[in-house]
Length: 278
Ligand SMILES: [Zn+2]
Image (cartoon, rainbow, N blue to C red; front, side, top):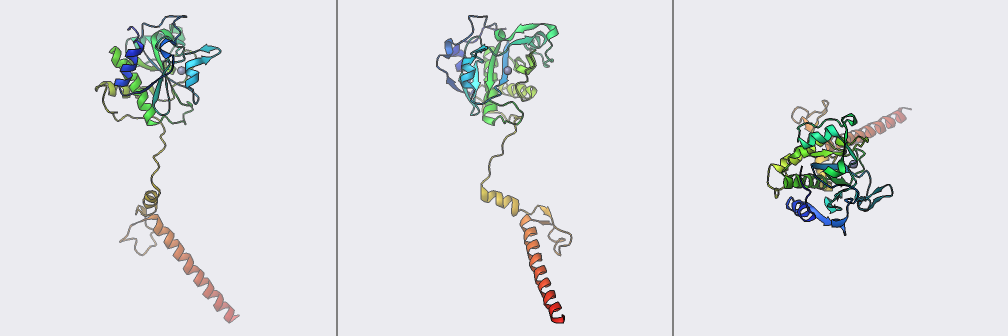
């Protein structure tokens, strides 16, 4: 339980943690404080947008759900845009059992159960909307995931909280929310790893759950790696298999090509022979 950070403190905490921060015009006074309390705060809540280019939506909201829809929007590029420093419409109703686990910074986060009662999550949670389709296939680029870890760690550090103050919307919602689409236990481990060091620490080796696209290798290198590396078992029929047990793929192709050329010559000779006799 803590008093919410001011806009200035929030920004400076994020910057100190190495987050690239952009401030949306008007964000400092953009909030839902007129309709309900903001704070005391108890934790941070992680979301995915389930869309693309959602920054405007996160700021402005929808007809049925006025913005801000989070305190921060996190682009694929890892740039964090500040949307609010007050009450935001992101958390909905949180199950009491899930909320209590956050307050207690419990090591385990129980499945949210409406039967335990509910809490207005928008009072108690900072929220970040991470740009991702949430379909399990859309990757979280490493730079974006790392920024999310830093964002959560920065707020925890500023309040003196541990990583167990960080939960996913799917871990608190009684409305069937499924975000974020990554493993929150892994995310908390990554936040804990950051909190173990100084805010200025270079990224620790995080176990990113995203399905990264492999970095495109340069073509000549790929060619060399794939075709020119002796890594395949030589064919047992090869005369050199004993002394040369592994072949490069290119060797198989040459062998096959040479074999076909020899076969053609043999067939042509056979034909010529038959014609002579015929
Ligand atoms: Zn959500």
